[in-house]
Length: 239
Ligand SMILES: [Zn+2]
Picture 1 (cartoon, helix red, strand yellow):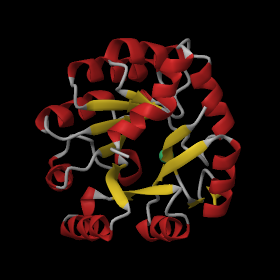
Picture 2 (cartoon, rainbow, N blue to C red; picture 1 turned 60 degrees about the vertical axis):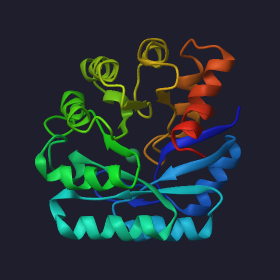
Picture 3 (tube, rainbow, N blue to C red; picture 1 turned 90 degrees about the vertical axis):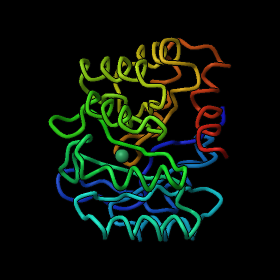
Picture 4 (cartoon, rainbow, N blue to C red; picture 1 turned 135 degrees about the vertical axis):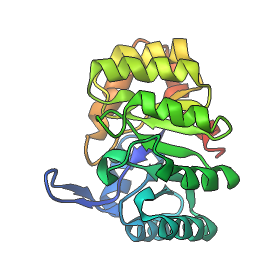
């Protein structure tokens, strides 16, 4: 079944995690798993830009911005988007240390909204990236489109909160990488909305094959799985 990977990284992450994939390695993994395109991001956007240049047909870029950098972040975001291959904003409140609904985030959201670009935001870690804070951000910007990356991530209470918050706010979509509860993928499809959940691998943090299998066994039909693996992200990203 063909796929779009809504969450992947080209580049090397050192420190505690010590994982990485080059652009070539990522493209080779994508070939093995019928992944047509991957949305990639990296803390240093020049790494993403290089990968986009190498494989413009395979990758779409999300601009990873740190709202704590103020004007500098706004200027960089604007110029990355103007380059053409960056098609969304990536926020990682845990990595860059701010709460998802902090006022420091607002100018970037306003810029993304003005440019009609989606906002991908990491979820699942207290105190910075809890589903409820992302819900408050989505409420404050009801005309912006948010993707709650990892849909609560590793903690059952946050995973349920991701579903509850997305039910309340129809401008939140869920991305399921690194989320261990296969049944919640089916629940999200049925309860949040069939078009509002899509698949991601978060490679190189997770193996594509593992992330694919968890979705495959979640209890959806083949046609429904096609929405999760391919159709929903394609439609969401207007590809
Ligand atoms: Zn990631």
